[in-house]
Length: 121
Image (cartoon, rainbow, N blue to C red; front, side, top):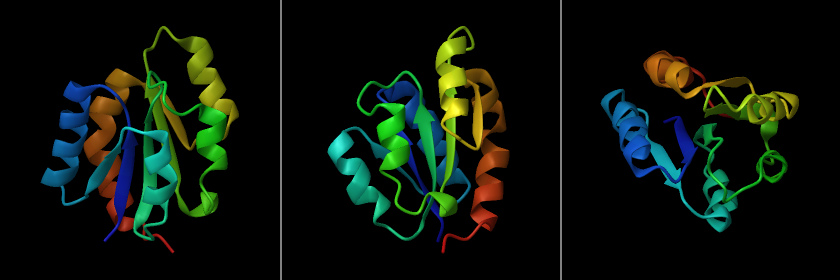
């Protein structure tokens, strides 16, 4: 079953994202330590990584470099709409989608529905 990883330190938002995933039958594992990220990526069911651009545990370039099967994993980043430079930096690293937090929140059910249909290799 496809699943996702969520990199964030925001406990309220973690609950919202994982709750949406659970309600749609798409498990989302929360990563709260950089050391857990590589281990979690070893799961062949992981087909997406959701990145809160306000998290400080894993620099964006290290995050991208840590994904061994990058072509098989969708990376979606979101952050504050006023952090234009941070959003641009994520886009420059080749994330599939970079958006303001409000858009991520409203689009999350559709994103998860799409990811559930996309099978990881």
